[in-house]
Image (cartoon, rainbow, N blue to C red; front, side, top):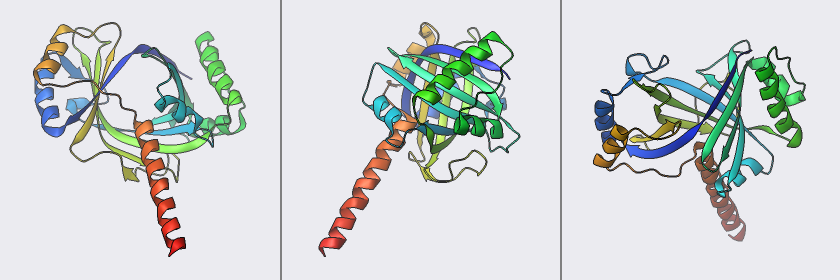
Length: 250
């Protein structure tokens, strides 16, 4: 069981295809692809977001509260019951993101969230992370609510390995067949020529990156994949409700 801890600031940008192409050209001098994005290619990340029946977690998130938290299960590509996946607890306080995750087998992760029977951890950090997740699971009645997947290209700084930039496209969501083993299908969240760029910073952004963003007129925006999906879900429910009322009136 491996444990990973991330503590950083994350800035998000919503950009078009032509801006992405020009930006990638400029970043080549300062950054290189991580192990998953060999030769600058993309890999697929699949997620299950857990929430209550009342969607308490995502509602708190989109309301702009100072403190936010999420629980998700993540895999790299489509997996089987015996594949390794990451159970992650993600917290955000005053714009700083803290993410702690542990590796489990898919079947083990499903069983843990369902039964709340905590698996064994062999290290102090492992026990600490699982205790945080366990407290979360017992505090709220969480269920698998949304499947969300996307293709990602990830870069890290040649000089500062902690400085990372990711580009996500082809964001797919669904509220049925919420499992990591079923495949990537569902509804698209954005237009085909739209990208989500995330800049992950430990302390401050490099000056060369600030200059590039300024020259290309790229500005940060507030964006949450799960939050955007939830807003579209609410809009669809409202539209369906209006249609039903019209049919009843007719």
